[in-house]
Image 1 (cartoon, one colour):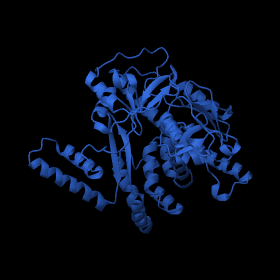
Image 2 (cartoon, rainbow, N blue to C red):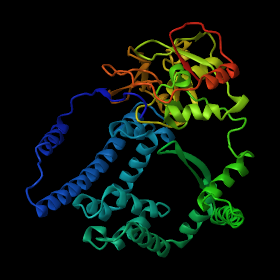
Image 3 (cartoon, helix red, strand yellow):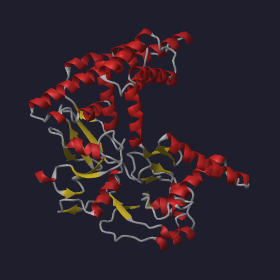
Length: 462
């Protein structure tokens, strides 16, 4: 999640008071005094979570129907009815917009086509994840066939109790194949079009680079890397088999053993971290927070290809200084500025990569092309924001803050994430560690291409 993003206000809802009372009752639950009682409590609370997920599914479907009715009355075209519903559900459930869309799809399938699975969820026979697996494996079926598979498996009877996730998926897949083998085969043939490569952060400055490939290509890639690692290992290479495969993958794709030659990574850190050995961590766009020592080591390993650019923040708040433009489109320098400030999509709970630079107050209604009126959004969130009755406005805050208001009148605030070196109130600065040698400081200064200082406050290095 990016910054502080919580709903600021919501209209009073009478029907929700019973739920609020239930939450208050749960706060009074205390652990039992014996082992058997503790396990029973855990099971009962797990059943309660499943029942709550089922209730959320019913509520999501009811909200979707109501929202579509309102949009129809407003004259929204039929093919656009329901637009923005998943995003509102995501905000209410503190999930990303893409996750909100999947939750809405799950709710529709359970409520309208899979009553046995929904009943099992309500009774605690299934949890939300296992219900999702059943819905996913029957997604290619028609509504009648899906109902038939749901009745065949009859999860609410306890037939799937004790079944592992793999066995559950196998049972659903087998039932789907028997019911409509042609649709299942077509789904498999179309899956090739979903091939992609993704990157996710992992602990300790590592990442998960994942490729979704057709089975033949995936096996071929893995076999080639395995054979390469076997050859090097037999020649006495001290690296592990996994290390050899990973290093070969990087070198073959990038053409460089290090993997970053000619690629700009835009590492952001304070000048104290770079030159004085301070322990304040840095930020790597597309990954997140990295340790100070790792950031310095990465720059030292960058050779003559390392360049420095100064960013300036206001003392105490970490707010970047502003730049303005009269242009309709954000110029390159301002785009980089806003991207460095926002890091990821500014929609609450969405941490997708920035794809669009958006005018918070639309340009066609007089919104300026400026840093305060600009926000980085992913493509999906930018389209959602243009849905009728959605609105956004800049708001005062310690750092750049915007308020998003949904068609139901709920409002959510998004504050830009703190840049490296931004102090938290009442938190002393950490002690310096791992001093940088005089030789390295001279070397980095010699290699630095420094932009002209315009509004000097507290410097950051990017």
